[in-house]
Length: 376
Image (cartoon, rainbow, N blue to C red):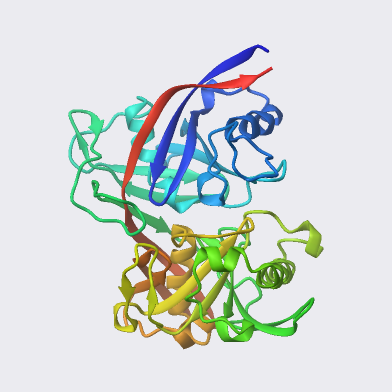
C-alpha cells in the first residue's frame, strides 16, 4: 500500500491536542479534506481506540486545525477547526475549539506565516467556523514561540508560558444571537423526559444549560461515571438536540451537528474530587459544571464552553445566573480537572443583552512535527 505525505504538526493547545496543517499543504479542493482528516485521526473506529491514527478516542483529542495567512484587514491569520468523531465517519465544522485556538498564533509564527517582534505581540485570529475575531498575546523570544513558563493550567501536567486569548464580540458565534430565542430560559419537550427547563446561550459557542437536579444529578459526577451511564447520556443527547432545534441550528432532532451545540450540566458550587484526586471546595468555585459534546464528557471544560458559561452567569435570569456566586466579570468554573477561571464582559442594551468580550489564559506546546502519512 502506498502512502502520501503531508506536512503537519501535532500540538497541545490548552487541554486539547490536534493535528495542525498549513492550508497550502492540503488539496485545493476542500471536498478532499474530510477523507484526509479521518485517515489522520484514525476514524471511524468502533473500539474508540484509534490505534491506526493520531486520535485519542475522545472528542478533546480528535481535532484538526487548518491555518493560512489572512487577507482581512482585521486579522493576521485565518483558521478552520474540524472536530472528528471517534466511531463515525463524521468531520464537523460547525464550531470553534477555544483550547486549540491558543496554539494558532504560535503555529503561524513558528511556521513563518506571519512576522512578529519579540515580547508578547498581538496576533489577530479569524475563525472561519464562527466568523469571529480572537486576539492572542503570544510570548515570543528570538523570533520563536516561548513554551516554558510557570503558569499552571488545570488538567495539564507541568507548567508553561501563559498566553492570553480575548474573544471580541463573541455573541452569536453559531446562531447569530447571544440569546438565540430571545429568552433567558426555555422549556423544551424532550423525548424520555417530558418538559425540561434550559437556558440557550451562544457566546463563543452555542450551549444548552440544564440544571443537574433536573436529571437527578449533582454536576460532580466524574467523566467515567457519566460516560458509562448510558441512560443519562441518552437524556443529555435528547436535550442537546431539542435545544439545537429550538435555537434554529437544526430543522429536525436527527439533523443536529456532532460538535455543536454542547450541553452543560450545572449546579451551584458543590464540593467534588478532581481527576488529580484533590478536593475542590464550594468556596473555591462559583459554579459547578460538566460538559458533554460529541458523545463524550470533557475531562476539562472546553474553553469556548467556559466562556459561554461565564457570559451566561452575568445574564440575569439564566440558569447559570441563578446558580453562580460570582459577583464580578471573573467566573471560577468547577470542572472535573479543578477550577478554570474565565472572564466575560456583558452589557444590557435596551431589551437585549450583548457579550462585549470573553477572555482566558492557556498554555500550548508543539509535541511533534514532520509529515502525516495517508493511505492511498
